[in-house]
Length: 202
Ligand SMILES: CC(C)(COP(=O)(O)OP(=O)(O)OC[C@H]1O[C@@H](n2cnc3c(N)ncnc32)[C@H](O)[C@@H]1OP(=O)(O)O)[C@@H](O)C(=O)NCCC(=O)NCCS
Image (cartoon, rainbow, N blue to C red; front, side):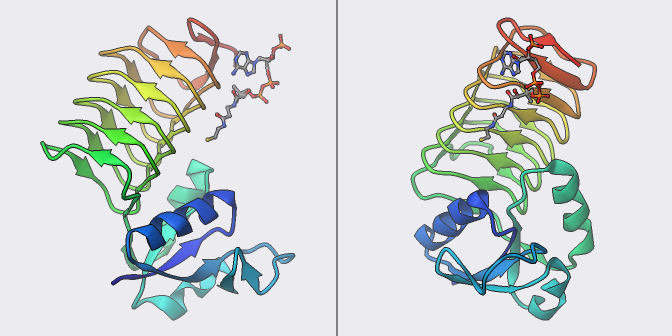
């Protein structure tokens, strides 16, 4: 059984805590810099600030922070093992799937054959990552989002809730795809894209 320290006492952190427990591992508690936090968060101890990770180097860490820049920075600061959280109800193909350290795959998500997922990625509740997808580091695939076959998503991009990405589409680094968008063309410039079909707004 692994013992895990969660960085970020947030709603996302709570869901990761549940995923860890349902996987049969133990949540030691949370580290978070918010001075207004109590000693406990969702019934588990708040162990200190993020810099207190140094007290827990024998444990595993998982970063429960949605902002990809912060997730990346903290992942470089912490010198330790990162826990990969996979909810037992997630359907992960047994054929050529790679899931990087620190990545979280939430309840009812599907990761199909040939999908390669980087480090510190969020595959959120009921998201579908179809065959041969390439999901790079620090990406967030939101709740209920569907990526068809052979989609690639660049580093730190965030695909919003309920969005769909058609097959063989490539989305570059640092994109925000709005809630409910449908991406049918490659996206080659970082920015925010919304609507059906998805168009850049800024
Ligand atoms: C795309 C998004 C990031 C834009 O947020 P923002 O930068 O604050 O932009 P604004 O709210 O100022 O909206 C700018 C314009 O785009 C429109 N817009 C925003 N989001 C949109 C969306 N998802 N689909 C269609 N239009 C959208 C707004 O109506 C507004 O139009 P207007 O200028 O005609 O009034 C945000 O709306 C969004 O969709 N976030 C996704 C959140 C999410 O998926 N959370 C789930 C986590 S699991």
